[in-house]
Each structure stands twice: as C-alpha cells, then as structure tokens.
Length: 302
Image (tube, rainbow, N blue to C red; front, side, top):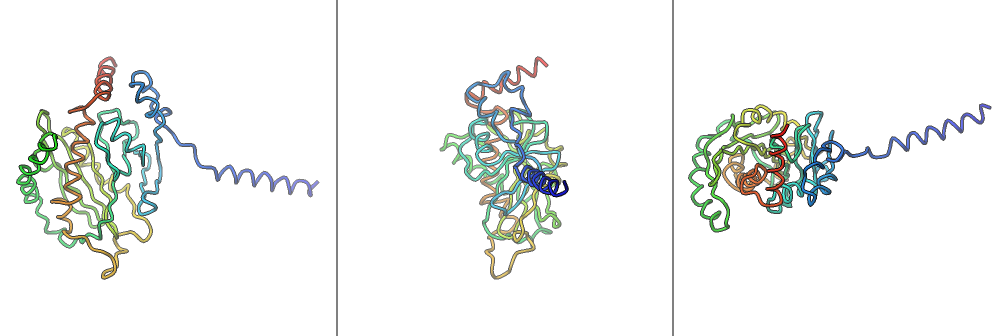
C-alpha cells in the first residue's frame, strides 16, 4: 500500500505546484466597477470593461523600476493607460506614458485625482543643489515664460495656460531621492484653478515622474499624500541612485532645477495640465462630453 501512496502523493504535489505557478487572475473594470454598464456610452463600454486593474508589485520599464501599490492604490499600465488618457479623457497620443495610478475605490470616470507615471533615461541628475533651491525664483521664471508659451499655444490652437503660484510645500527628500514641486495654473475659458503636482524620483540613469491630475481644491490632500505616492516607486537592482558610477554613467545637464525650468519637466507641466483639463470636463470633446454629463446627472440622483 505504501508503494502506491508515495507515487500518488508525488502526483498531487506536482499538481498543486503547477496550479500555484499559474498567473493570478487579473481584475478588470467590469469586475470592480460594474455600475458603468448602466450609463456609459456603448462606444466606450466594451473597452472600458476590459481595462486590467493591477495591484501589488508591478515591474515597469523592463525592470528599471517597480510600482509597489499596496492596498491603497491600483494602476493601469501600457495600452490601457494610454487608452484612458487618449480616448476616454480625449488627449493627444502620448507614447511616453507608462501608467496611471488611482486610489482604490475610484475609477477613471470619477472626478478624483489620479497620477500619470513616466520614466526617462535622460542621464543621472545631480542633487548637489538641493539645499539651495530657490522655489520662488523658479515660479517667477515660469511666470515670465508664460507669454512665449502661450504664443505657441495660440498658434497651435490650444488654450492659454498661466502660472498662478506654488501649491503645497516644494522640496527634495534626500532619503527618497525625490523632488516634489506643485503649481496652480489657470486656463482661458475656465473659472477655476488647476492643480499640477509633480514628483521626480531619481535613479542611476534618469528618473520616474509622477504627475498628479487634480482640481485646485484637492491640493492639500495631494500634498499630504505625495510622500506616500513617492514611496510607491522602487528602482530596480542596479538602477538606484546609489548605483551611479562617476566617470562612467551619463550625467544630465541642469540638475534638479532643470526638471523645474525646462526640458521634460516643463513639457510635463504643459501637456499634463491639458490632460487634466480634459479629464475634468474643460474643452472636452464628444463622446466624452456626453459621458461626463451623464455621470454628473447620475450623481445628482444618488
């Protein structure tokens, strides 16, 4: 009998191991937010339903960094994130976008804040100037550049955006190797102010950029949550800030202030602000205008 039981145990064990090796079933918007089907535009409903919700640890950019989302957040990545940005929120195509982070319990259809996720390998960024950053001077520089930026926007048929001032407390966290800097913006044709909150988490070869989309009224909440959001990002083995090799690795020009006054940082401040405007219904195009109005009507009935 023992001779028969041993092989049987081996077969059962092998079966259990094979089951444990199977990938976990991925949640979708249809699973987590089923009420969308009651009112969402049918032209968008099927694709929205299939969006894959990612929780836990997500390996990004081929292992250059990870999103460790914990219980409070989930992400959409890759083509799902770009579909939300480009089709659902009606923004221009953005091939650089790698993900969107949402708070658990909220969806892309809500007016709650969310964060874009980008990764750039533009070179190692020195943080030597962290203790001497003059954030007021940077704001003044941004305001002075508004005229030229708006001339270009007018020529491109885009709304003008002007810098109002700082939102929250800017600063550099040397432990997390992260710079945070948030501004309030105004756009022609829109009465309210717009929150554009950024964090740059530095790596050996570049940085991860988190750009929070939200309304001005959410500035206090977002500022309080920013350290937690920064903590969701973990650089991969060999790509941490401490892994930088002087004389071997490429160094980016401009240092920390370069992220705030030009290059990728400035592009983010402009482009993502437009994304925010589309998300919250400003200059929004059909069929999303119908979607947003329908959502507001449904809320009014609840």
